[in-house]
Length: 200
Image 1 (cartoon, rainbow, N blue to C red):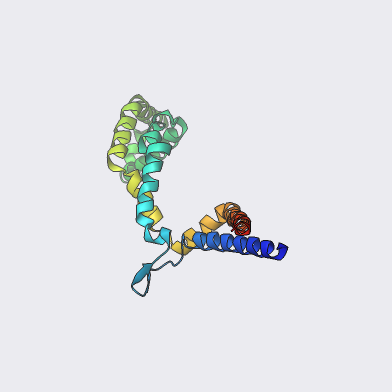
Image 2 (image 1 turned 120 degrees about the vertical axis):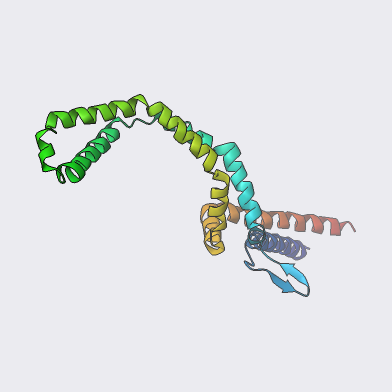
């Protein structure tokens, strides 16, 4: 009787473990659709990759981060130092390469103090109109950039082998726990079956 109970529990545990093991494997495998006696078989994720990509994109855009979330912070970016560097470089390059190099006599009129004034006027103009500039850029980004399609395209371009490795790397412990839980449930069911068989 003890041998029978042990055997039924062991078989139940083995069946539970094998069932969960193959269920996990069949998330990805087979990667390509195969036909067995007219029955088409393919892993869940490869088969529904684009549907899942769209669902993930919707979730990210609606629940996590959208283009509006990104653009909402653009206006807060401080670019004073960067603007100074860019204006200095452009003014100096343009004056040296396109004016002074072609018209050497212009150096008599374009002094260092004049160059500083030109730079100052340009920087002031940029800073005074910065908010308007950011508003136009933000609106253009919100109208033109489709976050959902970008996410779908990125996921769609994932190689299935790489996606499988990534999932197993991230959730390996959890997947192992599922296999163990399958074995435990199988053992419990085996024990219940033995108990029932004793009264039949």
